[in-house]
Length: 334
Ligand code: PEP
Ligand code: MN
View (tube, helix red, strand yellow):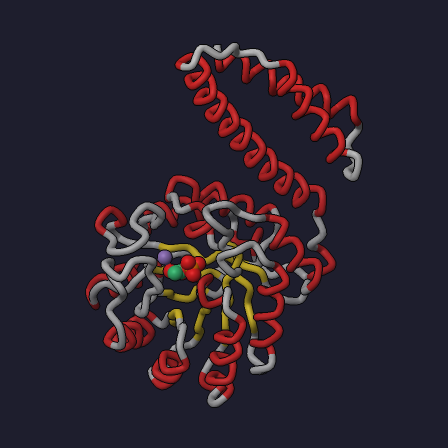
């Protein structure tokens, strides 16, 4: 299953142009057309979506290109309007997914006419919280509709551990990857699509715009239909097509992605430490203080060794790492 289309519907012509291109990409398995019309934007000064009129544009996409259509809902009123307009799928965004009361309210609204829908997609919450995501899926499952989980990461980090936990606890729930929101960067979309294939995700949700630079929202992360076609050529459809749960286990690959993500965070933290060190160096110089302060290093080391006692870290290793960090700090300060 692939959900493809622009971040936001901007005009009727734009939607039809993009739908025409998407309708020509591989249909080896279900392709759904996406466009947001009520956009959850951070700032009230930016484009908030075209609103209700977008539903009639999506109806035209469905009629003229035979594509099932999906849009995002965040209020019971939006659910009602979307169902009345014949949307095939609805998705709950990451901000909505952070609020279980809202998810329950939307579930109740969908339950009034569940037969009008083919399925519901729910993104992971904006914060890394697998339990909340799982709870949302359980709420939505009470509608009796097929529920799909969409992994979009947090703060442009993948948070592989969160998706791994979901897959372990709910192997029957189809898991899709959204490389657009996960990276926030069009250049990283194809690499993430490849990882999704490797990890046997059940599909993708990708933002596709015919003129990304001019997009009214998420301009940096949308790819063109031509780029989408390239990605599709690279990844054969069979790789992400529905895998029975039993065949999915590739734990080593998952664990390696998790480790790479931890390493990224670790090195970013080390770089931040050196930046603080540089500022300390400037202060010491301005105030005539010696760079090397052995007492201070002993204090830091003692505190770290005490902390490490409750972790599975050996004192020797902790000491070696602290000494390496300290040596680099001195170099930066000098
Ligand atoms: C979207 O899909 O356009 C969207 C707003 O996504 P998210 O909720 O993941 O930020
Ligand atoms: Mn978007």
